[in-house]
View 1 (cartoon, rainbow, N blue to C red):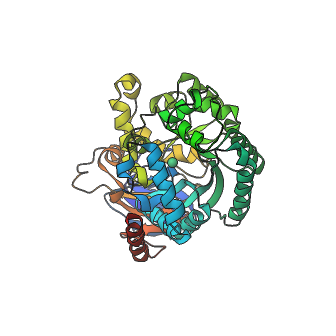
View 2: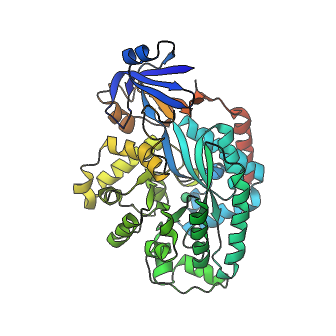
View 3: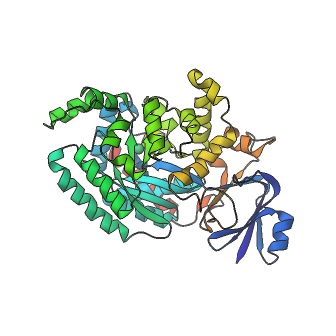
Amino acid sequence: MTIIYSAQWTVPLSSPPFTDGGIAVSDDRIVGVGTRQILAQQFPQAEVRNFGPAAIIPGLVNSHSHLELTAMRGFLENEESDFFAWLKKLTIARLERMTADDLNVSAQWGACEAARAGVTCVADASDTAFESMNALRAVGLRGIVFQESFGPDPRLAQENFAKLQTKISRLRELETALVKCGVSPHAPYTVCGPQLEMIAQFAIVEELPLTMHAAETSMEVSLLSEGSGAFADGLRSRSIDWQPPSLSPIQYLKQHGILETKPLLAHCIHVDAADIETLGETGSKIAHCPKSNAKLGHGVAPLTRFLEQGMTTGLGSDSVASNNVCDLLEEARYALLLARSDVTETNLAAGLSAADVLQLATRGGARALGRSEQLGALQAGMQADFAIVSLDGAQQIPVYDPVSALIFSSSARDVVLTVVAGREVYRDGRVTTVDESRLRARMKEIGEKLKA
Ligand SMILES: [Zn+2]
């Protein structure tokens, strides 16, 4: 069966926006893009679903999330000025106070929030990837779930790596056409050099995508450059021998083979010109997380420099513990306003447009996940991953340009339909695939437990 989705505006991104048309979808694919008249001629038997004053856009791609942490939205506000304490409270809550079912519910609720926000695909880093993959499958989102690996102590590197291998073989069995697994050594300060090397080799041999946090904080920089600061003190207190390599985080990751995997690196705030060149040369990709970076006071990543270098860049919400929402339209708006308000970057950023950041939130993310041939644009032959955003609200009228209205006046709350591989996962105000009222009640329960 072919369905024509039409609206006042269509924003394919691989071609200019147009009015009074839409897309034709058959099974999991887009089979036509054009005006209402052209689509009616091409697909005379198709059912037409018209959304009126709204924009059809490619599905948003969240290139860095932690859906399992959705229950920690607003849980860590008092620790925000101390990232070490923030990580510690989060880790204890996740490992000691949340059951496997709590983490599954938390990830499902995060996936529902994403579906409601027009997000069709996520790059999700997860300690309990088994639960997160199941959550994506239940809600019907597309994504890669990256199994996290931790281990700052070189004496335990082999053992920790073996645990990761075991988990991956189990996760492989959960893979579907939509949901895949990958690996994620958590960060340079939580995974020792030998373990980074083993994981990088494993990713290459097994053809697993790799993501990790990189160059996120000044504490990470001082640990690697001088062996000082809270992360260094933390290692010492656990009797872990640490000799600082006197390298920047990016050069350190290069030294330990991570950049050979063409990784997707989240944050990349503390990078200099040489680091950016290295990232470009190695084909590394960036998950730009401007709101999380700002909320935790970690700094501003040089987005315009990344783009100037032609680097593959997507947008990430990071976990809602540090955001506090998964709203890629808001993330795109914030990325643009932040780049424009940085006076040292003004000349460069002056050229950054609403269309550019919408590209980051869709095609950039698709490219960062290695899926740009199937995702990120409305084009015949591509996967039918798209969202429809109402542009009829008080905050949006009048609309002179749909892209400008999407970026500067719209948010997740304006999304009216989300479709993944031709399946409507969110419509008429509800996620169609799971029981949201059960999940809502369970989320409140988990919140009460964490608060106690
Ligand atoms: Zn993260």
